Image (cartoon, rainbow, N blue to C red; front, side, top):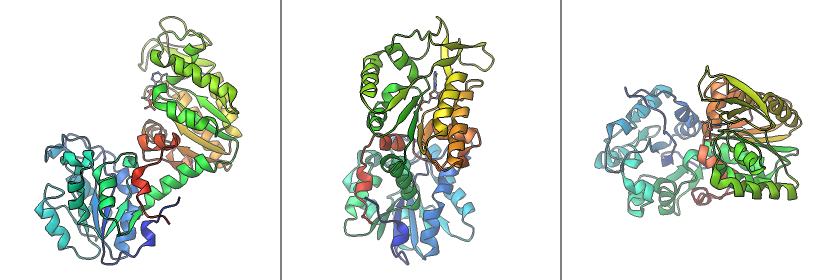
Length: 402
Ligand code: AMP
């Protein structure tokens, strides 16, 4: 069900309490090293400010203990960066407690077109526990609730669920970033044009199990790369050398292979591997087809696999991708991931719809300078994976329907 969005409600002179994901990396000197999450929230922020709303932004940052203020987890640098991105707009950062008296009085004194950024929600452990009393204090700040924090959408933190529940009767809407994420991820999965290809990689089968099971009946082909391929190959009785294998998942991998054989979905495993004895840039490398000898680790898909995956992707009309094909952080084991990224980008250029999952996969396409070449690169790692698993999110269900 589509959700009502912030641009569909009148915000003039109203206090719009908005949950954003400003969980940006900050270095030891307090400098933001990547401000993408702040920039991605700008469409929602501008939509409210340009229509004379009063905007109250709340977020978490990092993993503080939940026992009060910690300077290294303060959102102060984020508020300062936001002010730089919005010249002419007053951005306030009152006090060091999101539910403290300074925050409350700054909000009650706000004028139209002004922004208050609240201090880190997770300085209160009640944010993670979803506490109703804490949520009620936050809920008091708003006439309208807006959720634009896709990266946290799979979590029932207070600001994601208890706050909108406490604001029942007031408008509760999706922000423009959240709307975009839902549109791409749910459309890719539920209204996909065939051939529909899923590319799954990364470290562990256990992390992707739910996604594989959910996608099995929906996609035409699942291409498996990354370390998780070795648990499948081991299940098939192949020698995998010292490659990363989840021993306790071998039976489960067998069950998935059997389910794939009985379904209409092809599950394709790598036929060759770029191997090393350690994960380092100048380590000697060998390509092995089939069995991997003792002492060697499969660290990337090999050239034959890359080319086979490329051929399958060339015909795809819908592609979802989650998880790198190898240890992309260390050359030369980035090649398979890069070639798969290029194959998906080519398919996209020919009209396919492509969605790249957040987390490590988004980091990989950013590192390759290719983020613009896909239909959508998700901002949520865990959240986008849970959408691939077919899970419904309480934090989204609570929002008003369109
Ligand atoms: P995930 O967070 O599950 O998507 O896993 C991403 C991580 O898997 C990245 O840090 C990769 O370096 C790692 N990875 C991918 N392929 C391999 C492999 N063949 N061996 C070891 N690690 C791998």
